[in-house]
Amino acid sequence: VVAGSSPARSAIFLFFVKKELKILKGILMKKKLVTGLLGLSLASFGAESLELGLLSPTQLNGPSTSVKGVRLGLIYTENQNVEGLDVNIIANKKQNFKGLSIGSFYDRTEGNFEGAKLGWFFLPLTFNSVGGNMTGVQFGLINMVEHNTKGVQVGGANFTGTGTGVQFGFFNKANQIKGLQLGFVNMAENLQGLQIGLVNMADNSELFEVLPILNFNFKF
Image: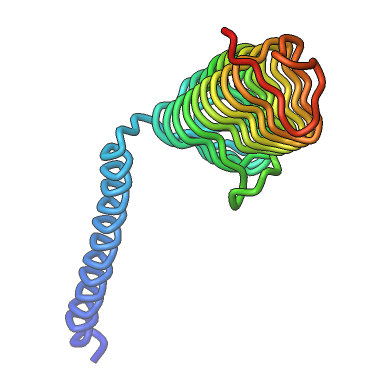
């Protein structure tokens, strides 16, 4: 009986082996499909690279690399140049940036920033710092640009060297601004435009250096 049943058992065994291999093959094909679609999705947005970071230097690529595509960070992520979509939970740093940055309670760009910086859920809870020039939008609790700003700063306190555009916040300060400062306290050494707020200070005002409600200088 045992000898007669061996071929039957072997056939059943081979049947199940083939079935399992077929299932495994299907899983691998699905995995390849998902990976391919992910790559295709990133490529369709012009993405060339992906960076994932936990706590620098624990990153997918490392602090010395540049990113053109998508960067996702948890605690602290650091890279050279970043271009594309940048989403960080707590903190990040990069040399130059171009694109859209979301989240991150501390956002530092050593060089130039081009694009938009938005806080979590569009709330001004971040400290945004740019060591070079900023072109675009900064939205945070404290926004600081060490050199030139072209665009809009919206936050609790806004600082810039030379600004062209709008500063909107409780406290606004610029060495030189061409445009509008709107807030409770506005300060400018060289004003080329308008200040609206509770206290407005402009060293080159057409009227007085310190005025409530409104101050301006259009002689430039």
